[in-house]
Image (cartoon, rainbow, N blue to C red):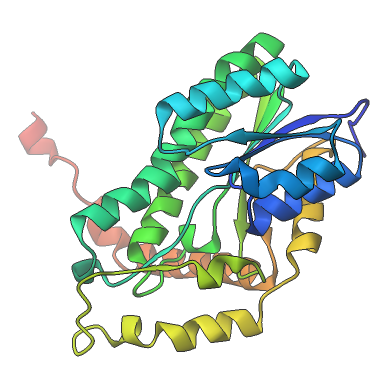
Amino acid sequence: MSEKSENKVWFITGTSSGFGKALAEEVLAKGDKVVATARKPEVLQDLIEQYPETARAVKLDVTNESDAKNAIAEGVKEFGRIDVLVNNAGYALVGAIEETSDEQVRRQFDTNVFGVLNVTREALPVLREQKSGHIVNIGSVVGWSAFPSMGLYSATKFALEGLSEALAAEVAPLGIKTMIVEPGPYATNGFSSFAYAENLLPDAYPTTAQFGETSQEFQSIAGDPVKAVRVIIEAVESENPPFRLPLGLFAFEGIEAKLEQVKQDISAWRERAIDTKFDAAATA
């Protein structure tokens, strides 16, 4: 089942907490090497001290193109190659569309979308030269189905779905694999690191005001992030890695429900909407 023949080099963004931290720890524990990145690499000191031969901490603010260029170059300098790039860095903005400011929206996209682009575009020349590699983008179930008061976060994850689909088709002939991971809720620090809209309108949009309760509901069904990252590792090392990898029952049920909803939505107006070709007389 496994294609693993030697230890891999993983380049992981956002390793100071959450999925990134759990993934780095699991990868290192199994003997692989990790370029662990964070905006403040000093927070990774314990990890580096535990794995001095196989772990390197590198400064990376994914929104900074120079940081991305330097981080990839440093990773290659340290370990000679990059086998798995994991675009994990990101955060969630909570607020109805009207409640969010332009600055907040741009910051959300800068991190969750343009940050992925910055790092991926710097890594691709390395992977192309190797004629091998695996790009893993951490998406979300909300990249399939948007929730009220999470529209901007959902929009970034929807964007990541489209980027990943196109990227997979572009780089497959070059020997490079692509996977997008679509988790449901997991017990990371993500629930405590939400950013909130600046212009709250609770009378108009109670879903934002009540988001604390919604968050608690998500936490009550949150999965084990260690088990989740083990599935990611297993998928990366499998002979036929999936392109899409939902994680957790919530994610699978959410995606399946969305597929059924879309099918129903488009079928209702199918006959009327497809009957829009030119009439024969007009064509003549």
